[in-house]
Length: 237
Image (cartoon, rainbow, N blue to C red; front, side, top):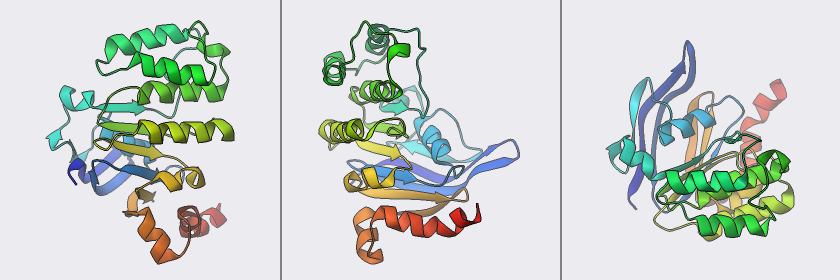
């Protein structure tokens, strides 16, 4: 498969604090990749580096073989781990913004997804539950015809019933020529849809492997493997 994302010897610091250290990754197109790690290990930093929102102190990130430019950013659809919109905005205004700002945005698809969770276009963001706010943000991201989808903690505030709906939506809208990267601490909810997993520990790459290979070689689920790998750290807290 073709390399869609290349992270080469990347180190990122915030002042004197190192967020990521000497990270190397080759991420192929046509895969759903999970990024899991304890808090503070660099998940969000890695996603922002790939999305082109921040830049490394050393090393480089290539998107489709190119250094990051306006053109490479156009093929990335990114959702951060916090709400992007003001509570005073209406759903219709946000749909208008996406339609005007992103050439690849499919408004009809977004409207259909929102109708299924009973979100009206005339509603203000502040009137929505926290879970529906998260779903709105995810549906906007997934309604773009991008090559790379980056979802940072998409399930954090979503109740179990809507969590399953969101996961099924990701699978349904997933295209073979696209790459999906999901950062989450809810490993058990997503492990069955992941092809590969990236595990970070102490700001370094701990593991980048096929989920099936981990299950076969370790004889346990990805969630169990993750818990066992970090049990010592958890017990120290």
